[in-house]
Image (cartoon, rainbow over all chains, first blue to last red; front, side):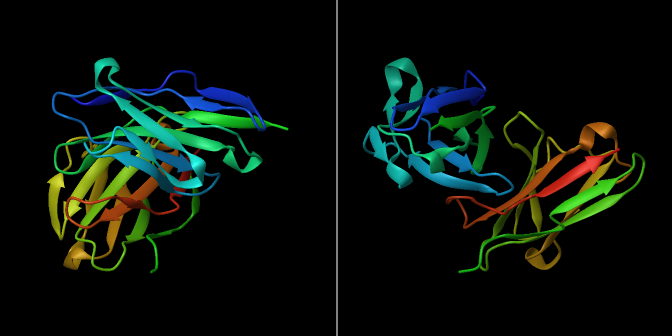
Length: 112
Length: 112
């Protein structure tokens, strides 16, 4: 069965510092992996996705993620945090008939 | 292109009452999903439609939840009777077959 683990529900980062959100997955087949962002009172917006092409995936708003099969990981990074990055971030794995299994999410707080 | 529309945005009901949510997907999207997002957790798939047929409803509590997608476009999700633990955000998403999911803003349900 496919599943996703995100540790640490709240992540605090100083403005201008590196943002690192960890995601580990479990999948019985080569995975398709996603990162979504959710701003307050809004739906989920796709940041980036891995679909078995390049292992380093670049997304919107300066975010990128690297797929590491040996570590079953798909960590999300951004070199320099901005106040507008304050949001909740979800990692997800695709399974079955185009269905998504989500992690519990990371609430990112940016400290000025 | 208009996004996924949902209404109402907020709903407060007492336990044992009934409630219905409405979703209008992106035009042309054959697949429609309903997710339940409990506070502090990632979204959980409740039901997936392809056109007006159910693809997966394995996680839908069928004793109290029902959903329909008549004519393969709009969809409604109903809860009857509601319980306290149904308090959550209900997200609707749509996609072309086998493609990226686009999420609506959600309906925040509070059961008192």
